[in-house]
Length: 271
Image (cartoon, rainbow, N blue to C red):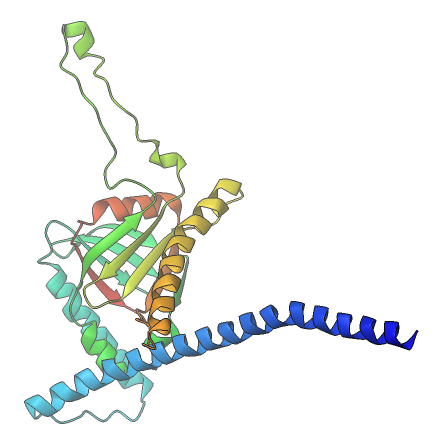
């Protein structure tokens, strides 16, 4: 009888460890994955600051002291944004200006605003707040160039025209309507300095929106996870790029994405 009881206890222990071991390993992996990604972000911040410090030393320039004065920093950010917008006047044919202090995005041609929209919400990677404010202002004192993009809609609506046989048919040229007005608009821009900007249309009650949003955000997240995993297996620190995420209305997201050129310029003020 006692032998049977002992066997049952051993069986329960084996079953417990059979269940608990994979869970324990998953928890350990998740903690390590989070730790290594935090390390990656910290390394990016340190490298960013070190690059500008090295430029000071190379050019034998004095390090400006500001003692964390908020007024001084705000002025430096405004000066940087003004310089960037001045450079944006050379954008061909149109440039995008993002001001997160006033929550406004504008499309500009030669310095003249041709379209403006309100930014409903935004979120910025914490790593950008960890950068030396003066170096971040210096980085943003020139427009950022788009090097790649992806979106849920085509850059331009497709229009198909056929040669008419007669004047009657000429009045009814075949046109494929722009069906993108029914598609939730999300797009991502990657800049030449590694920053990424994700623009999402505001949420709606339509289930299709949630599915498309999840699909749009999940794909790059999975790709980064796979890349990070490969680096971790090679005992390398994963790559890192900070993200700025904006929310605007659907029509405005569509207008902005289609207006800016493939390799267009973007002026950015974060605070």
